Amino acid sequence: MKTARFILRASVLEDFHQDERNLFIFFAVYLAAWTLLMAWLPSSMNLDDIEQVIWSRTWQWGYYKHPPLPSLLMYLLSHLFGGPSKGLMAFSAQGCNVVALIYVWLLAKQILPRQLAIAAVLITSLIGYYSFRAVIFNHNTVSFPFTAALLYYFYCAIRRPERWSMWILLGLAGGLAMLTKYSAILVLASFFIYVIWQQHWKNPLVIRGLCLSVAVFFVVFSPNIIWLVEHNWLPFRYLDHQLTASEGRLKLFGDFLANLIIRWWYTLLAVWLLAKLSPRSVVTTVVEPTTQIEHDRRFLLAMLFFPLALATLPMFFNGNALNSNWVAAFFLPAGILLIHCFFRHHDEARLLKNTSHIVWGVQIVILLVFFIGGVIVPAQLGRSARTNYPSQQLADTVSVIWHEHQQQPLTIVIADNWLGGNVLLHTRPEPMVLIDNEDISSPWLNRDDVAACGALVLTSIADKTTPTYADLFKQASATGAFTLNWGYAPHGKIMDYAWAILSPEPNSAPCRLTTHAD
Image (cartoon, rainbow, N blue to C red; front, top):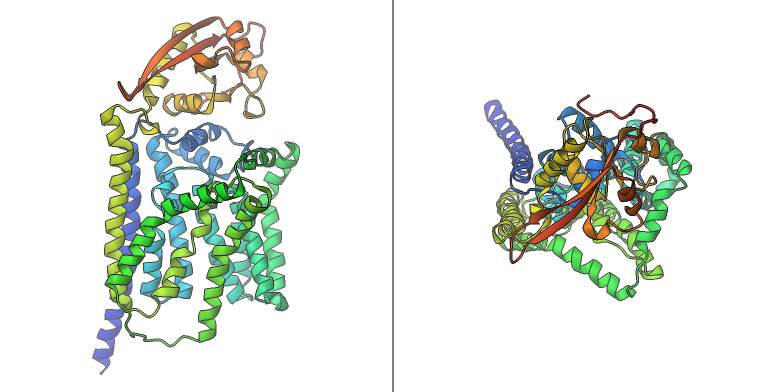
């Protein structure tokens, strides 16, 4: 009898370890595949990646569009790995995604049986925001792990309010989430709505815990609050401008819904296949309290729909534009909710096996469609696309022009985000970018720096005479133009660029700028 029990326990432990090992093997293969292919196949990156390349060049407590944490993370990684690169950006982005999915798994384990929890994570990974969109290192993607951590710690704190550590971690995750993307305030607001709705406020332990979380939150978030006050709440002025739309409310909602469908159809297809392959069967080994099941369902519904409702209200009431990517982090509980509502009473082992097969297959399809359709085909046809922009050639050309006219290193480039970021991506040592010649967009530079260090001005021929660049070309010690082929005829473009050299002024102070290589 003892031998039989030992064998049974060993078998259960082996299955437990194997299922979890398989999940983390999936994470490792997924992360490696996206990182290596992004490093190898495209010649350039998304505009948001390029923007982070510029912002992460220096340590700042805020930027004119966003809070600082993603750029600070990339600042540290760039110093560790010798500067930014396509592979590093992809690894960092999908690394954030994987950490978020691990937190989803931790939350799912609190709500679902072990094998169903793993199935929920795999289903979540198919949502477009957590697959092909997660290859972009921007504020949306970096917000994933902090939002997932918020959901996990809030659930644990509400369930066991006497645990001080959960409330402290909740406040920490909330502060970091707000330092990543200000839309995290909608998730935090949803927590308070949930506490009122479920009457958790009647529990003194919950009120005490919330006060502790709020205190920790403000300690973590306070550096950015100070920066916001000093800079006249600049990101919120930018946000107000971005939310202004000219289309009608129905048109805005239709576009928003259409983009959601594009992000979701892989997942819905997988869930449909899963329902066909995994018929309902009664294989329940543990009888759970009905009240807890209902509590968990209400929690998941609230955490999914409350932030979405808060995000869409301005669109209906004020006609504000809403980009579907801005709500990307709000769908993290969706996989758990789908399994909880539709697959809870299925054969767990069979469901996990079918889920694994479907998810592996669909993830391979997503990978192939993304790289073949978005990278290889445009390059073969000579079509100009973001993924085959001649980024390295641009940087090499700029470097040659600068060193033909100046002896000192190139430390400042005056250009827009796209041109300046592509130069910075491939230039070592890395220069800084004065974005569109605007001090407000580039607080890391001032006019004294340009006078002391000199600068290379780069813009399109069409923009050379605009107010942004015209005076710079008049002051230049040398000017010129060059062309780059972006793809080839008949689908490609010929890009005409103008450049100007601003030499250091004779009576200026020594150049204070340093580079990563110094």
